[in-house]
Amino acid sequence: MLLPIGLVVLFIVAELFIVRGLYGKDVHLVHRGLLGRYMRRRHWEGFTTPMPWPLRSCVHYWEEPDPSKVVHEQVHVDQIARDGRIRFAWRYLRDWTHYRYHDIPYEAAAYAAEDQWAKKQAA
Ligand SMILES: [Zn+2]
Image 1 (cartoon, rainbow, N blue to C red):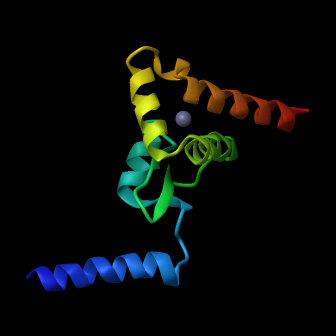
Image 2 (image 1 turned 60 degrees about the vertical axis):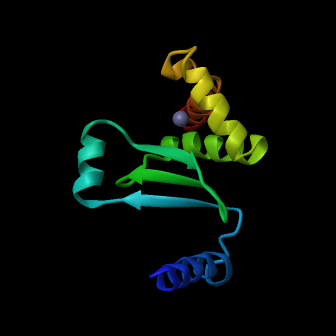
């Protein structure tokens, strides 16, 4: 039983690492269908998580993302690249116990970039 599981894991890692060249990459996924529509109706457009090797981060969007949300999530991708996956996750969770969601320093920076982008579009 372990051999087939090991082969499947090896195949997936090889696929990500060699075939798709995703080592250390940031992946963007767009979730459509029932779950995507449900989350979008709840006004949740996306989120970014640090990912274990061989990836670095993964951005999930619910249905087609608004361009301002892409700007927002890219800030998190850059934060993960700058601070590292573990430090980002640790600081984010730690800060969430001290701040309201929009005031978490990582979120404040992302919302500031989103606002800046929106102002540039309006000008
Ligand atoms: Zn955010």
